[in-house]
Image 1 (tube, helix red, strand yellow):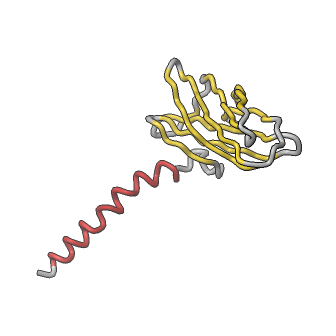
Image 2 (tube, one colour):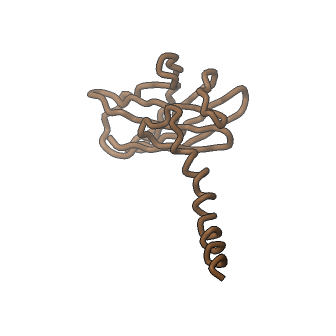
Image 3 (cartoon, helix red, strand yellow):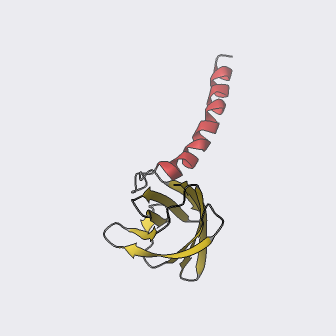
Amino acid sequence: TENSPVASTSSAKTPSVIASPVAKKTDSPHGESKGGQVVETGTYHLEFLAEKETNATHMDLYLLTGDNHESVTNAKVIAQVQLPDGKQKSIPLTYDVSGKHYTAALFENITGQYQVKITADVKGEKVNGRFNFNR
């Protein structure tokens, strides 16, 4: 009967084994330790960072795909930003080869929360992610 508790202990460990792959998605060391907001959608991994500068906010997007989180270099990426005052801005992001990410600057200094919808077109496939940041 001592084997029964061991068996139940094993089955109790099963949820943590199941949880590991979920945690692994955002815990992967493939350039994802940027400290940004992460969205997993389909086979894509999006990580968004907003860095405040004096007169602008520098926006970076890491667009990765596959189990190895390889950089997607040929997407058309647009950030649709809702400013704290409700106004909308559409900002194209360009690919930075050396940094292996998409980047753009938002020249706004309004204090408050900014809502960002990223739309990436990867060979006709739409990849979306929603993020926010405060300034």
